[in-house]
Image 1 (cartoon, rainbow, N blue to C red):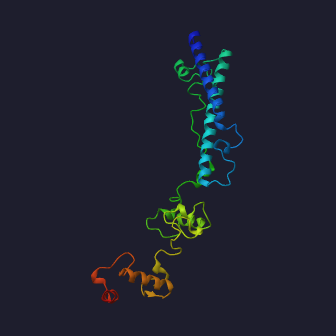
Image 2: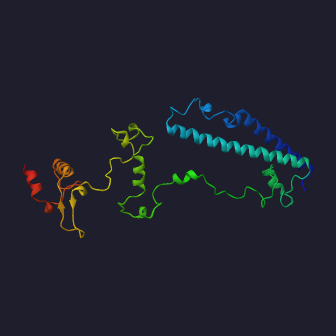
Image 3: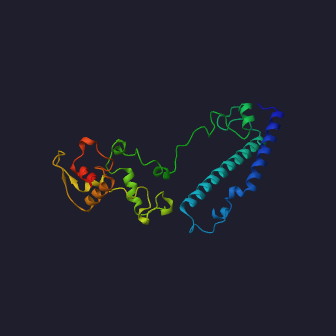
Length: 253
């Protein structure tokens, strides 16, 4: 049972908190939410000429303002509920079980009208926005992505196949600018359908034997690149005991 002095002190504390919250919301126009559109808070007239990343930043800030505004409005609602309970002579008792709320809890949280056991905010919601499903890292969502040396069509390839139709990036956004806007995505120059260049002109039987080279334009480009570097492979020269006449003749020249 609260004493008259304790009740007076808690009422004064509630009135002070109410005044602070109301003044704060009035000064910032409820975090700018009373304006007609988010553009008004940043001086923009339209989204037409804005970069998607800038629009994403503004959207994030708008969502944050909504969350903060909701927090302060709930706090103000709880303060008014506490003051109303004082007027009705039921302040200090839990709305659910009717038991006395400990004085220590009321001093720490004077706007509460619930005991700890029946507090409506004692659980964490697991409801998440549906958009988070596509914001997760692309790897690890498929069984084939768990292999260490995977060369099949994986999640990264899926993204590249979609990105080939266009993204919000421009050539200037890439470390190595591309000449074509269709190539303005990560690893746009990656081989499609094969890993190494020589897979387009080298074949073998089902047992890995009877290796055969099928001359074509890519084969000529591949050999020209090797001749320019003076090596037998694209990843470096072979040991001396594996050199053949091809390299020896090239070195003689």
